[in-house]
Length: 328
Image 1 (cartoon, rainbow, N blue to C red):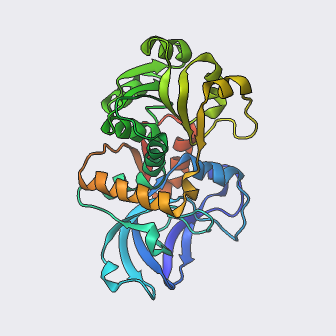
Image 2: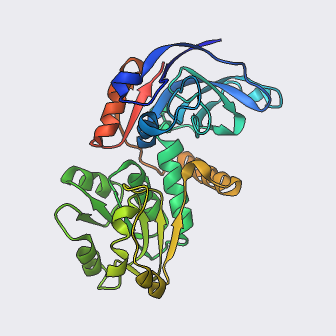
């Protein structure tokens, strides 16, 4: 069958390398489903991949997140799945054909039943942002009565982290870069906010915790946060959970404060969760969706014909929420 899709054949700027046209799509094989996608989520990792990740296939259809309806199943998949509304995770992880396409064929388990009450645009925010947030919360441990510092509380992942931490009973201190992001994080439940551009995060956090430091840091930029650890922002025996860094190669750390603080540093890549962690996070997200306990932030929507603009908005880093491509 044919599918309308966007793709690139080489690395480069969005307007230089992204193409739109029709592609041949294989029928679903054993254990696979075909999904008619209505939305595709654009994440920062998608634009980074387009610019820098080696192109190891004749072409790459970008994006890992999306939502739609199962239209066909392969051998070994229950025929009853046809017609299910689903959301997608890892659509373009270690495979060339992602969700910037009207149809996608992928493993059945990567098409997750979408509970009623969540729109397809909102569901396109789940695969990377919400799953990253949920895994970070899981790695942080029991948060009831604890104080959590959320780095980037007004960003896509941080917005979910803030909500989930509050649902777990935590006090949340969030870092933000401007008043608009502060309002966004506050609406998600943040108790206190620190503007990292105008305030010393270390001094402000220590003041808010009576000098003790926070119990947990959930971190999107280890290249910055690593420098705070020797300064008392994390209490002794505290936990830092990290899923990203603005500097992704070498980050300097001072060993002695980490040792004497007995800090627990936990890093993870949301694309590469263990089967047990993946099953746990999917079940938790499903429950939260079914109970309608999450706020979703869709910042802007673009038709597939404007995918270049969508990528450029993500790269600009100013959007308040997720960028979504409409495919139907």
